[in-house]
Image (cartoon, rainbow, N blue to C red; front, top):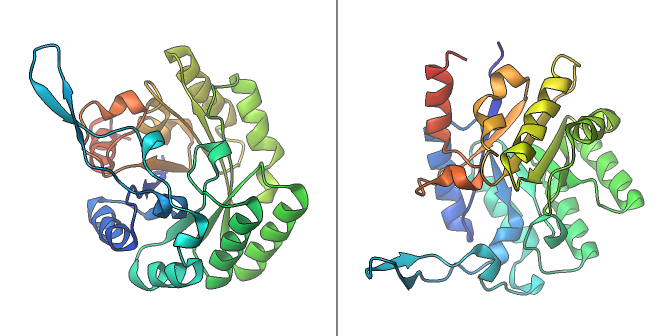
Amino acid sequence: MPEPTICVALDSTNVDDMVDEAARASTAGADLVEVRFDRLYLTKPEPVLVEQEEGEPKSVMPPESEWPISDAASVDAAETIQKLKDSIAVPVIFTVRPPREGGFYPGTEDERIAILELAIASGVSWIDLESSIEEGKLAELLSAAKEKGCKIIYSSHDINGTPNSEDIASFVRDNAEKADLIKFCSTAHSHLDALQIVDAAIELKGEGVDYSVMAVNSGGDWARIHAPVLGVSMVYATLSMEHRISDKGLINVRDLRDAWTLLEY
């Protein structure tokens, strides 16, 4: 069976760390990396000490939703895109995720679209365009990306829950002609939610559509681990070695490749 492409989503919040993380991701087995440009507006705080039931304090990082966010003018988009392009050797998926889909970009939608336009013009390998972009703007971005030879991910991120598998499969089918890959990511609140993702992948398998379906939270890693038999074209992984990372629905890139070997995928 064909092995899916593995993309490591970069967690860094500054350019130098992103470049270093991209190099480590490639060494660890990533085929490409996702540059979350919106993360450059985050400021990573210091860990805080939290008292445990046993009485011993534990160093804990605050949730990202509580991290400080700079204003849109704090990053020179054109200069930063060029530096990332010059410094990262592996293919890049360029993403500027808005808050409505779980991202951190602090500016207006027009400012965000302008950054996506700059990335396309720079010749990035892949561009991630959300289905929630206004129809006219989306059409312009899709046209520009195709003209530039930039591969397109048409994505949707449900930060509130998980629809049923039929709706997920319909989203993929209905938009298959728009992009090189259709991506759907939901928020799982139960293992039943996580199974909707698996069921959608099974329903889509063999239909000739390139898709990436996944969830965050517990069970969200099932579709990632079993991607080769589910027909998933691209799997998103991480370099994080965080304890119980599967509770977030994520998986380390090395662990993912090891799992595929052990399962003889």
